[in-house]
Length: 314
Length: 297
Image 1 (cartoon, rainbow over the protein chains, first blue to last red):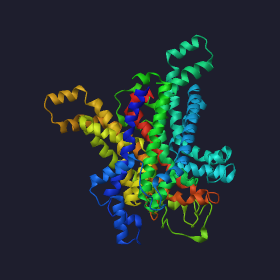
Image 2 (image 1 turned 30 degrees about the vertical axis):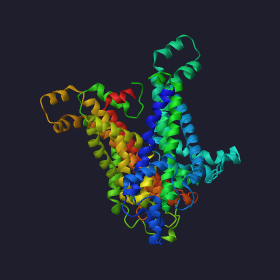
Image 3 (image 1 turned 120 degrees about the horizontal axis):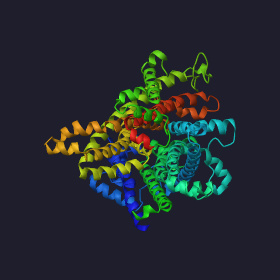
Image 4 (image 1 turned 90 degrees about the vertical axis):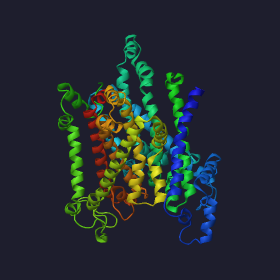
């Protein structure tokens, strides 16, 4: 198991470094002087020169890269221009919301996907199945930020079941937190749950045709055991493998969702930092999202190995 | 085959059972989902191209007297908070949305095809490119494109550049996978043995073999590009505020959703219909061009 995880970890490294290197190059190679752009029109030449030196922009590219790499490894990303404090003190204040939102959305997507997929497979080709398949096709095509607006219109504005926007941390009461996180998570998870429904349905149909299911039924095992213990466990493996990709997709989706629901998360911080040209925060945001994604993927790999013991020995 | 997962699978099976030699075009013409989604896309394309005829006038023109008019005979889709005609916004906004989608698709799929061919044939290149692809694929493209907007400024060209770049990765993987299969075929070995130059082998044998998966991939990339542009413009880091697209049109709509839901509904609906049609087209093309894959699913 440890060896397997070690190998998975090595494979995850590019996921962290490729986006970061791209951001590094974007800043250095884009036209214009980043220091001048960060400080705005009012800055004096001395201030710009000082910032260039502070950011190391006056050194050769390969030296800059090594300094930057050291900063990443020691988690020192410099000072935010806007907040005037270290980036690594700002990020944790925002990361929690994003991580919770992604986890809730992922959980919702898996639950909805697995349940709908199984219901659909057990009703093969009857109206229920067709309904689920059609809904899934629509679900895959719905832009989540638009879906979020529709959810607000229906549940917050018209029915008044949920607040329109804002965030209550879990420490202030789980129910209050739940009402602020449910709609954003649902909107964030809608496309992935539709994808998982399709995947679960086809994998469940494949598994139901397997001889060992026939055997289990022939031995007179109750249908609940056959489906729950034998069929669903095997059928859910493909869904778990895509959960990592789904998580990556969702961490992109959080940007729009956090803005729509006014959640103080990383996505919103990132967009605000882009508008303020606060490059250290942009870099820190990308790094954090890459790290969260890497940890989530490792967790999913563990889950995968638990579900499918063959994986550990490959 | 288990059952029709996508709406078109049944037809694909019948088409194949009846006549294995039927050409792809004939199968396409007999495939209801493929034809319907193509019709929708052609219609959308025509409407946006003919925007000045269908919805004449400046879509950005404000008309304070007519603010928040509900959809009706005068304004089909109603008006927004500034009294702008939502129908005009949707029709004109579609131009940017579809054009960005088209350009991104052509650029990224072309680059991915070249890189995929190289990657499939040259192992050293493959190792480097695949690590790069792993890194890009797992990471949310919206976040990368947002970061790009920070450095390059929010504009149509930034959006095209950023989306083309991140969308190379998935197509590259598809092309490379197919090339790896094709290069092991005997015809390639035979061509090599008789001394056919590598470039010619690419053109004559490998490229035709990867065309089908590229076509399927292109539909999905198109859909991802349209969605990507909309999402970026919606959060304000896409095309500039003076330009018009479906995503842009939704940005301010959130604040007026209770008062004038039509501002939200129509641009989003146009966006969703486009993405739906592209996804269905991709699904149908996969059924038509690769029946083995369709059967397995």
